[in-house]
Image 1 (cartoon, rainbow, N blue to C red):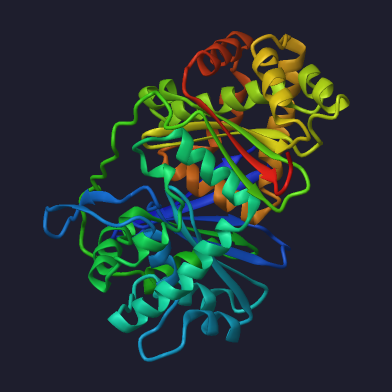
Image 2 (image 1 turned 90 degrees about the vertical axis):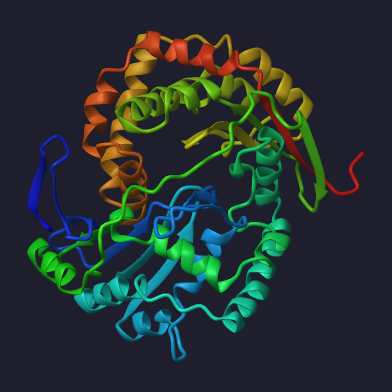
Length: 433
């Protein structure tokens, strides 16, 4: 049964969000932007590259599919039976379309200044009409194989890929999102239909529309064109138990770069055991973000000393990501002396002093970045979809942020740095000694 339109007022940031659901379980959100010239829409499924072992709802069978199939399926969902593709449909209607796959989500999107509802109808049709044949699947393998090889030749991508391989022994997060040349060669049309049937059910998806649109008109369009799918139980997914220890403590590769690329990664099994979803997961994310801002933000004493000594540039930074069965901290950037940088980080990260004043300043900055999300539809859509699929109320962000204490941040630092699992990935210049 479809759910009625609900409106959420967000007075702290001056926003209003409208939500409703379809009878098949699709959840829809509309963020009105009066006077905004461009409309932006995303249709996302809670299905990413790590979801390679699950129970097929149709058969009850536990299946394991090959690495890279979520990304492969994303590519194939633009192809139409009878020839042509959905890119042509969007182009005829004046829209720009794209899609991307990450570890936990696949997202399809368009942006347009005209024919909003016609483009929305195309988006709704596109994801309900898969078309896979032995011939078109074989053709796609060649295309994606070239894409994989291209990424392997990009130093930044290789830096991250090598780090994840070094940090993780069992979890599929260690495998590139596109898979490997060998893994994609095993994909069949039946595999793709099975994954589409399982993960592209409306109850596993989210539609978001941002722009100068009438929420009631969006609702009417969605309900008129939404898939009349039967109910499906929650998808059961399985992830291997990841040991705390890393696969390798160091991995190096030589490539055509001017300066060495450095990445220091930490596994965070404590965060995995505590759970990365829900409001507790969001609070941990916020505490962690504040911790890294205090440790390596532009105004931190450690960042300033490393910068002034020429060991990092202004693009050096820290990033935390977490999902089912994994949690990873990555510190990365260019450096002329990887060994010296690693030593300084090892010595400095546990000792950087935190103050209440510094924390409050970082919290104000973090709140400002949250508010600024609403001015950038692409970033807002990415953030909202990720939080929704993790069972998180995105609008609780300001209140959770305000309640974080300095003691929480200090405890989080000890928790992260005292865990043993860490690895270094280096991309070194070719021909250097």
